[in-house]
Length: 264
Image (tube, rainbow, N blue to C red):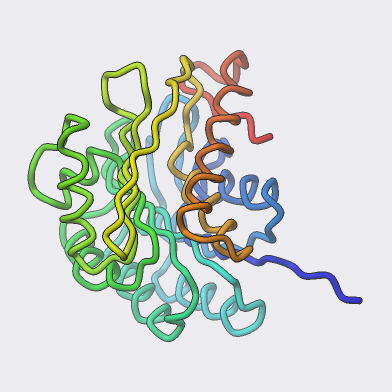
């Protein structure tokens, strides 16, 4: 009897320190029982101290990587991270439009934690207007949601209306992450295509090793969707994995800055 793979395609940038980007996606997808395929959009120069440079991959090469995977391995879900340039956003939209049944999880990466710009305004506009309608689950943090909606979102009370407004941009489901709130509790807001809204709250774990949290969460959601779980359970299971990984890595020392999670 043949065994079943759960292939997941990650479209994102490469991180040489393996704390974030494609490398974090690979680790996460494998840890949760998936088979990871990749389409690299850019090679970044970064370590635990932050991003210091980005070398782009030609947009046509990104397209061809995606096509090679979609036409042969046929992933059951797709995670999208840093696209970096407008040309790449355009190619990704064009290719993935042909696969409307494959769930897509989009982590809208516009700015690195260290303040490095990861996508220009034209690319952001194209992403919002043409990529968002293809997305199954969008996973913005509060800063990214503020950029998208054009207003500051800094309090828990603002999250439900912000999540609803993001949903109205054509996305099927939105997970608005509240990790940057200055509270002792982590508050994430999930709104589904049905209009159902859930607050998920968890104790905040004290740790400086939180690099790649967004990459890990979105990849975990994607591999859970690939395995046939509902959106709500995929998010719940992915969140539990991220919290466990933060807890597991909080006492480790790797580099001089913000270290990675312990992907366990």
